[in-house]
Image 1 (cartoon, rainbow, N blue to C red):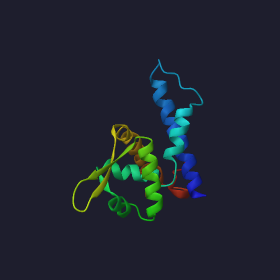
Image 2: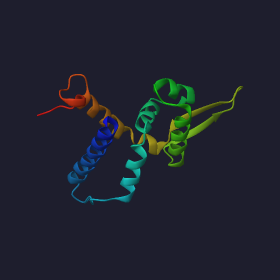
Image 3: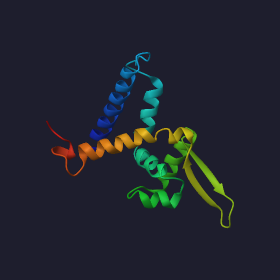
Image 4: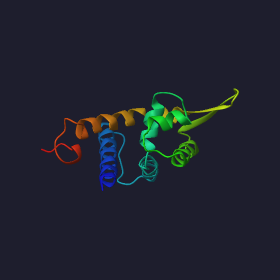
Length: 142
């Protein structure tokens, strides 16, 4: 239930953020449905996806470093998520020729471009669901 509420809140927040940005740019009209936006939200709202992006914002990480930074994330799920991010050109897998061979993951230019959105969502979570917030699940009430 909490995850569903978080996902709905996340999608509504992103949608409202996009509408606000679009409203400030008089030449850009936002439509109610955009298939690209829907596809992006589907990708980013998958379990652990936003958290993985947040870890990689701090720079390249090895698989084990990402695992250590995210308690509760399983090896197979991390591997799947990294492949999905690679497929969508948000993360680059770098093989470092050393002995033994090392593999690092880093954000691409497109992935780095999501940094503002990730930071905005992080700030939103701290503001509305942080320890100083009131109400259910840390959500402030009016």
